[in-house]
Image (cartoon, rainbow, N blue to C red):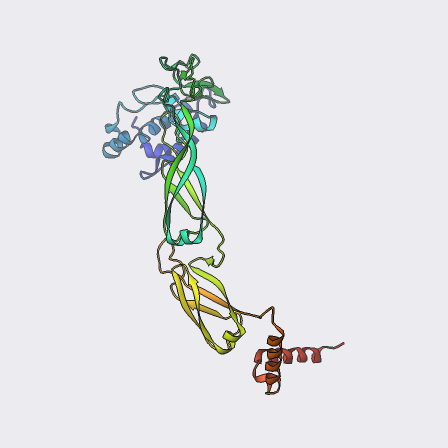
Length: 374
């Protein structure tokens, strides 16, 4: 009887990735597994067929040969279900279902955990960029036992529970599955004489100093990834990554909103009335700001390209200066007399012309009360 196309068997297409192939096989395995279908020859045949297809399509070399030559390219290489020259049922089944029951095999390395470090910066550092030294706690390989965990002169021994395989078989309902050995935790080895320096862990906790290059324009919430600087891997696995989280401190003068900066500039009533010129700070130095006469409090002045160049590129923003007309305090008697004389000149010279906003506001209040019904 001619064999069915392996892709048709699993119900997938030729461009399906390994994750979807595994998912398709899992569905069929759960449906046709002999433990769920005792004395059902048809179900057993379909299970073997699905397992054979899975064995071929999950192996990059076998899959490439099958795609080019069909069944002729992999005859004698497929697992054939429970036996044959390929992967055994326990290998395939453990690979697909091991994540459900906590499976893990000997020699299966574990990637180290990712770490996060919060880096506080001044606004100037965030805008212009900087390089910062940070100290991060982590683990390093024990130098006394070279990471083996065993006392110098001794070696780890094969686990007696799993015979060094790192896995044990167990019954889970309908299924017989493999999971990590509870005695050796999947390593396949037992350390009878643990290293005195690391107590058998094979690694030591230690702080390391790292140099973090902060690009110009970063803001609170941005992250910098330092590849391989996270937690040390287990059983030879790769280290995780370190994510440096940026937090920008509040500034005494400037407030940042995206690429723009804002600041308040206090001016005297004389400068507001007559106009003038004053120096204002920017993150690149001082600049002149011209105040026109009759400037009112709250007026915004925009200084082009004096803001922040975004970290992901683009033009710099602007600096927006909001002027605040400051009322003089701690006046002397003479200064108060001069102000009273000045006020008299305003009142006696059609004062409404000198305070248009005040006049319009009082007119609005008068109209409001006139229209109210008590």
